[in-house]
Image (cartoon, rainbow, N blue to C red; front, side):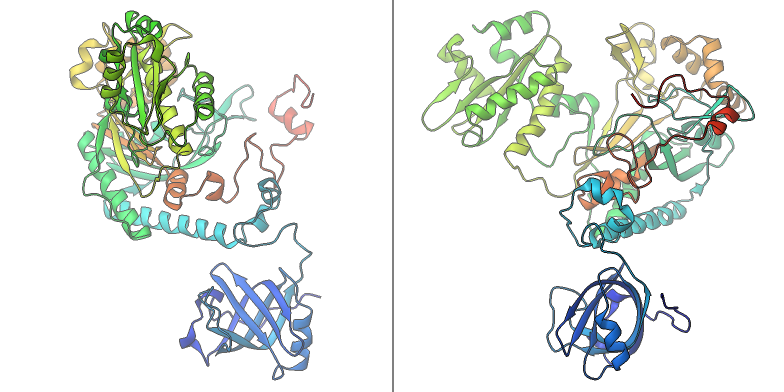
Length: 595
């Protein structure tokens, strides 16, 4: 029968004891990590969220307490009262290894069956099993450290924004469905049959309304929901550090963001970030790294070979250039020893898998300089390519050509990361940078039209406004992303508040006045009553914690995550609901739930 904790109060956590506490009488609670029976001695490691302390039972221990200690097993929940003493055999592997508790009173508060896996750091048990028993998985010290650091980060966040004059406001979870780029999660209304709420993809419109309301500086740790396929850095529900500021322009928002990141990294990790973060325009980032979220912890930038191969004897290059395309490359320095012909063939298949027509290459070993296209070039033409690429003996040059320049750049951007992985290029530290001046429109190949790259309230650069109707490809936005180690950490923009410009923007996007009013009428109406200039951004808290910890997936920094198919294994949701619940909502299932 489980014993009570009546009359016992915890005096300290398990991981807090040090040699200076010797002689103190203490009471601790926790889970048994393991018990070791040495005959006349019994030791038990007691664990809580702060660490482990050793409980000791010996010839001086009351016989009833000693006998009870004999029954202890892993994951039993216990309370122990005793005196801290210096250990005869110290353990330098744990912070409390200099001391132990000589137990005088032991209570077994609850027993445990043998768990499906051992509660230890870096558990080798398959993740599917650990997620099924997530409440046990979360007892592991490494996961607990992750979530305790997340708690620390959120504390610093709230303190920082409070010190900067921000007001924390809560925005609704049940909102009007508006186009925001991803698929909404919908919630049917029982009281208004046939209508639906949406779960917010972000609090975007509400935070703008808060600026109209005069709150001036808004912040929220907002829960957001997007019905889209999952990745290592994406979950269907996530937390965003959402902020908005009135009477600001781009420089004000970026300065605030930099100050926040410097404060956070210093207080949580004791890492000093630069006084000013580097910046690249979107165009510069694509030209140099083939990505709008480049990992700048290593070099290997994209090199333009267009002039070097113009008019050469290789038809693939010439046909791409004659059609207005480009030829570009990466120079993998010192890679010839690791990138064999077989490895290069794998890279070729990789780039074909993401839409490239192929991969040309030059491999310069100690024996010879070989190439997939060398027989088509004169010696002078090959030397020009090698010189432009900055190639030396030991290097591998990887070349992509296409009639569409963007395809070349994005292919090389993906290839750059793949090569860095294969070469085990060190990627240490925290490289943050801003990406600015994003294109306002992007070409929709499927619908053969220009579509907004951001939400329709993003302001274009002042000098680009004349091109809205005549040259959409020349329009750039007052939009910015914060990138950390190749991961998009934050995204934001300055908003449009001028009604005339807003209507102009809707027309450029192909939205009629009636459509705009139907989708965004409440915000447009609010803007008629004195909307201050404003802008802001959303910072992904989950991704931020993941990057600060160096965790491989978001599941390592979220208490109860979903898996790849958007299922939570522990509770087995989503699940079938009662027919009566569907009837109450006026919903009928038209196809079988299982096939």
